[in-house]
Image 1 (tube, rainbow, N blue to C red):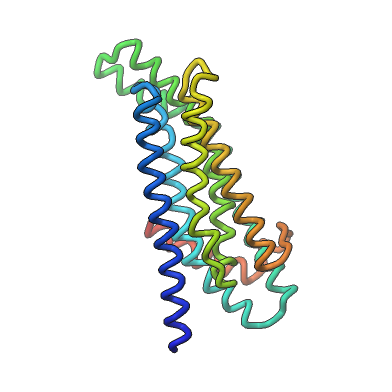
Image 2 (image 1 turned 60 degrees about the horizontal axis):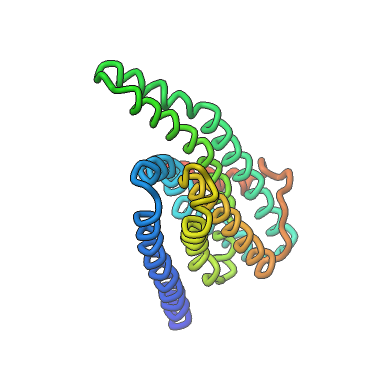
Length: 250
């Protein structure tokens, strides 16, 4: 019992430290964006990035961990290393398919957002500039939406890392997005005609960086794992049965 309490305290301390660091850098990021990106570009980026962030909250972090950690913990207790790795690979394959489909559908149907809002603007006598800004926002949304796939696969790695009692990398990895946005905002804003594209590039770099560091941590702490074809195995199905009510709750 004492050992369990010690592990929980260690987990909470590490995650609190990583969250605090991420929030502090998030404040610095917002200050950089506010100071260096024109108001119109900043508003378009914040509007465009809201959707993948919302879906990340719904489908990622809390949902994946709540559903996958119990299934992975139970499988690890069976002490069959090969089967445990196959389970992680099967879950990885299923999550990759789901996030890839959602990302592709989101990109394909994103123009419908503009059509719907323009339909409302018809009744509100919106001016041409507002409609042009909306078209630009939808274009930015299409380029930021792939972040959902990148962060979804990064977040997936957290569940087996938690089962392996490795909390460090998941706690500080969100910092990489803030660092990428700050760096791109400061160094690359003048590279583009519209500085909002520097922020879009920062989103891509941050998402890829998080995926890479969490995948490396997964391979170091759990072993080399790649997607496999066991996506319809009983344990993978059981994990997704647990995932569905969590998503609906979110």
